[in-house]
Length: 130
Image (cartoon, rainbow, N blue to C red):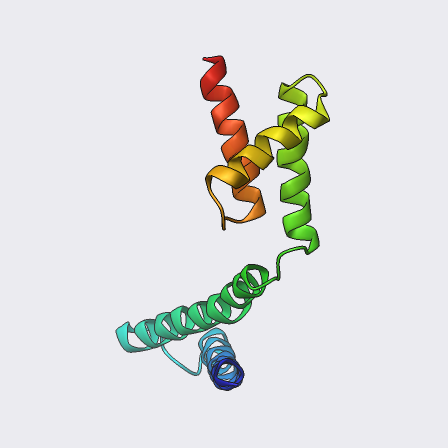
């Protein structure tokens, strides 16, 4: 609920800032406002505020949504598939050997995320081969 209030407040501020920025820029273009240090700094500050709020609202919100996806969604499945394929490729297509390595990692290090076991098996295999 708190995040929704922050998003709503930031959206309102973003809209007001956008309207003010548009107004100031239009007045500068028309020639009603003279370009001096005050109008330059005011316009620059509006641009910075607008850009910052845009970044926070759209990019950070999207990043938080992608981080809050539950395990088992397409993002984590793609990572699992990529790691799985890489390990199986290194083992020459031996799927059973890859599963054994991951199962051994699960026994040695219980309670870790699934991707971690595949990464661990890859790291151990690459270390052993060197």
